[in-house]
Length: 316
Image 1: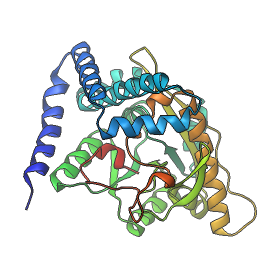
Image 2 (image 1 turned 135 degrees about the vertical axis):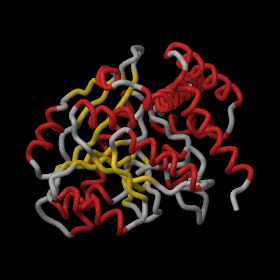
Image 3 (image 1 turned 30 degrees about the horizontal axis):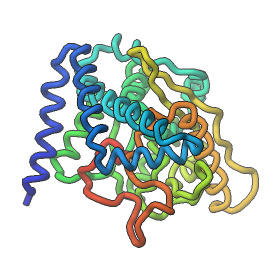
């Protein structure tokens, strides 16, 4: 039976997709900034966690600087939401003009090679907009995965939303999803995975901003198993309406070592690429949850809490 809280959560997202997309863009921008500032001033758990995470990224930051970063981070986070609610109503021209990518040749050359391409991203800026740009601007469909959310109706909304942007969405269901992704890659396809936060509690330990966390093994394992190209991508906003991005150099499969050893080396290389992009644009990293092992409660998995909290950050 669906709880009252679940119905309220589902209803709030339904309202966002039905109402916000009808607002003029300047009004939506102001609304997002207003909500962000109110949330920041209340200093709830998510804001405090965001600030704590930024303290790892910018270890010499003063308390005043961390407060500035968390405020900018919340504004970036709400910009993501306002854009996401409005994306289904954007024209192809608006999507194409809303994203600019450095070193995009690494992606386009990979697609043209037919060897399969894995894009791995952290939770930066708006990966849904980047995905819509790939499906419309590059005319290339791709496959991704999403964790099942509570209530089920909310999960269905997110699947319908992303499928409407041209994505194939698989449930995060372990081996079944992995097998489908591998088949897509062997067919020369493209997959996109948000990959700096382990949802399984069985990921690969990496050093990230000087401390240990776990990241998913999936991107590295898929690259090894299929021969696909593994490309890290980072995203950020600037003061313009255009989101920016960078396709980093490919993560190569080591020439020697066991599968576990290769996976460890490759996942660390992903972590390093993510760290580089996050350090340049920390305010656009939307990590409002615990990430580092030191911060996790004893016996709790990294995806602690309700499945309805920050559902777009659960896709991986």
